[in-house]
Image 1 (cartoon, rainbow, N blue to C red):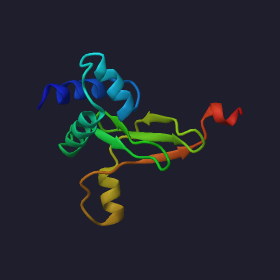
Image 2: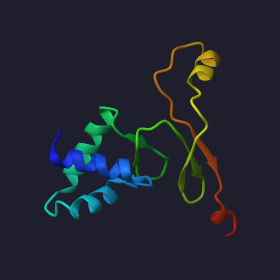
Image 3: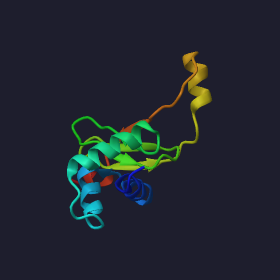
Image 4: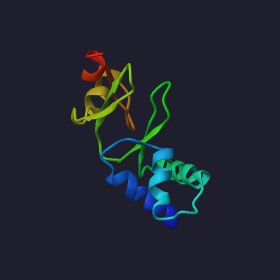
Length: 119
């Protein structure tokens, strides 16, 4: 793994939020000021393909990146706010319902966050 890949993995793994590639780029530039955005995208794609990070896609929003630890997400339908939620591992229940073996799943629950409700 390159020095950029290691640092990007560290940034994503230690982040308490779900960062976009541009946010990761800004964080990486603090350590490596000459890095280019394409390097960030290339490393993010490689880390995601190697199952070292998760990519969270929400329609109409830029992809965000997250630690690999098993968890699910709440997504605000209005503002796109993304929050972690731990529903436990539902793999066996999903396999039983679907009648097939599941490699992984990415559960996103849609809701309207409190801030948007108050607007």
